[in-house]
Amino acid sequence: MKVTVGVCGGIAAYKAAELVRALEKHALDVHVVMTEAAQHFVQPLTFAALTGHKVITGLWNGSEQPGADAASAIEHMDAAQTTDALVVAPATANTLAKFAHGIADDFLSALYLATTAPVIVAPAMNVNMWEHAATRANIETLAARNVHIVSPEAGYLACGMTGAGRLAETDAIVDAVLGVLGRRNDLTGETVLVTAGGTREALDPVRFLGNRSSGKMGYAMAEAAQRRGARVILVTAPTALRAPANVEVVPVVTTEEMRHAVLGRLDQSTIVIKAAAVADYRPRVQADQKLRRSGPLTLELEPTQDILAEVVAQRRPGMLVIGFAAETHDALSHGRDKLLRKGADAIVLNDVSREGVGFDADRNAVTFLTRDRAMELPEMRKRELADHILDEILTLRRPRKVMDESDVPVSGA
Ligand code: CTP
Image (cartoon, protein in one colour):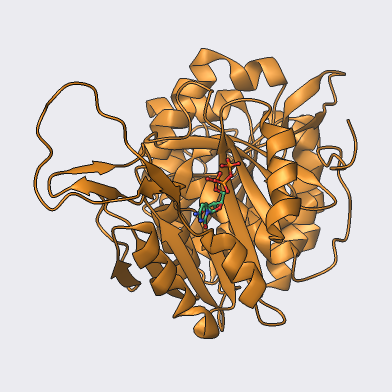
């Protein structure tokens, strides 16, 4: 399969060489296109030597005399039609803006417009440029047009500032490429049980105690796991969502029903992801008939069973158990406490006091908390976040190679 790597001008341009090597290791035929600015940072010869192909450096290559090289003028159409994926890394604010607005004034931007292959961009820039409203709007536009965004990481930037803007790790970009090519099957052989939605506890035949969970994060987890080759069982409380394709759906309403559904399927599961917002209490008595209004009403509630704790108690060797926690204050300390108390392998910590993320939103930002680290996953679409969470879950199966700056020891401040 042919993958075209677009390299833009930025300090991170040299990392594109490592990306090219990594893609080639997956038996992909890699071709490189460089913007004019990129050539100030890296020589085209580097990429030509790595790929064994001519590097495309402009719309009018080798045609100093007008009309001398008709072939190069239509080269982008050929490249556009023959590539199976276009990956731009590093993608600068300028190139992202051109993509978002359909400007085609160099080879890479013309190629982007002309191709129907999936496109992945891995932005890298100064943190203020990344957070600028113009860049945010461009990223939103591109994401809405199905461009896969491999978000930059937080850390120390070449400009001396600290924040989001560092080019994502090569592995993450390669994963995204393999994903769009349908080649990322790193969950093959796993059975992933996902719980989603908010359970409901009936008060009477028409009323229930519920919560604001929309189920979006759990459904995104289920879809992402299925795409990556897992067999997926989705135990779902009522939601307004359409279930992802090729997923076994087990609809439930109450906590007790969810408990039965989960515990009954534990022997088939290798990874349990408890994204559901489970009711902690239910009415001690359930009225048979609709309750009538007659002055003040006191409800007596009793605690439900903690499904997560039961799953942990019954786990088989090798099974991974991941909990979710939605917190409104002191998120990190509550999350750590929950992780240790429940005995899960990790807690996906959601600070729901933040505007625009969490409950019922399409975006989310979480901290992936294990006993020895806290990985911040910055705000992004829930579907994209689901893949990042799965990446983190998979690292629990293998020892970590490197620590990076965004890792904070859990036992620390
Ligand atoms: N959970 C569960 N069964 C329950 C309550 C929660 O399995 N009866 C799971 C949720 O699916 C989630 C995790 O436990 O994965 C944390 O849920 P949360 O409601 O935040 O935790 P609680 O145990 O209710 O803790 P607290 O009331 O202290 O916030």
